[in-house]
Image (cartoon, rainbow, N blue to C red; front, side, top):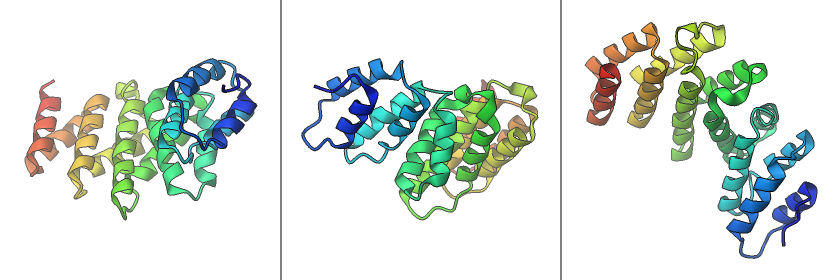
Length: 214
C-alpha cells in the first residue's frame, strides 16, 4: 500500500522495483497533488527520470496539474539537468501547460520553448522535442491574439515563422503551421500564405490550407 504522506510516497516510488500498480499510483497522486508544497514539487520533478516510463508519465501529468506552482521549479530543473531525457520531458510538460504557466514565468517559459524549437538535432528524440516546443508556443500565444506584442512573444512568433519556412523536418513545419494558425496575428497569417506557395509536402500543404480557410 502506498503512503498518503507525500515524502513517504515519493520515497516508495523512487525505490520501486516490483511490478507497478498503475491504478494505485494514480489514486495516490490525485490525493497528494491537492496538498503539494514547493519542496514536494521538487521531489516530484526528481522522479521524471524514473526507470518505469509509466511512472514518469504519471509524475509529468501531476506536475501539469500543479501549474502554475510547478512552472518555476521546472524551469530551474531544466537549467540544472544534464539529462536530455529529463529536459525533453520538462519541455513537454511546459508545452502542455501552455498559457496556464502564470504571468511571473510567462516570458521565461516562452524563451525556453523558443530555444528548443531552434535547437540543433542529432536524433529523433530531439526532433520530437522541437515539434513539442513549437506546439507549446501556440498554446501559450493563442489567447493573446493581436496583443502578442511583448518582446518574448514577438521572438516566439518569429521562431515559429522560421520553423514553418525553413527546416527540412516536415513535422516541425506542420507543428509551426498549427501554432501560427492558433495565434492568427496578421504577421502569422501572412507567413502561412507564403508557406502555402513554397511548401512541397502534401500533408503540410493541406494543414496550411485548412488553417487559412478557417
